[in-house]
Length: 207
Image (cartoon, rainbow, N blue to C red; front, side, top):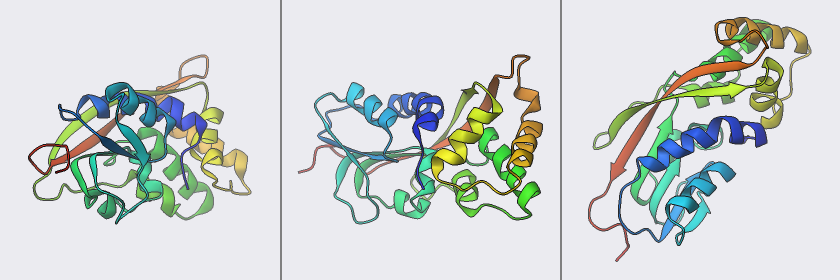
């Protein structure tokens, strides 16, 4: 499972900007990103125009100067693997329970289907910081044109097959997000995430 075009543009781009802003100073030769996000790749290229930017493939991947991971990386990678990546500096952003939009879909799915959706639960889970990692809070607002667009971004574009009671799912998502819906149907949803950061020390350039 991976993020689609809408989530990449509407959710990941503003988070990518904040993630990049927290990256360490100094020359960087190679950067690994997770997930395979055009927004995160673009932000990395803007920050380090001469660095090689590659998609992180998982535990055991090549050593890099910087690992950048957004919350949707948890759709396809266990968080323990991200925290164990071979990188001189790692910045891993997790929702840590603060993904209002994700939580609305999770609750709606459980109400309509009678069971949780494990993939989405993994993305929205709380993550404890390992020893040696620092944490900081990230606040943002995600915007969607409608509940239907949000559902398309977080369900259909991720390759999740909607339940038979498709209309009921949309209605329950709308119910959970009513407080963030404007008169014209657009959504401005406050979210918060935790940024986990670790640096191994020394130069970012491999010896």
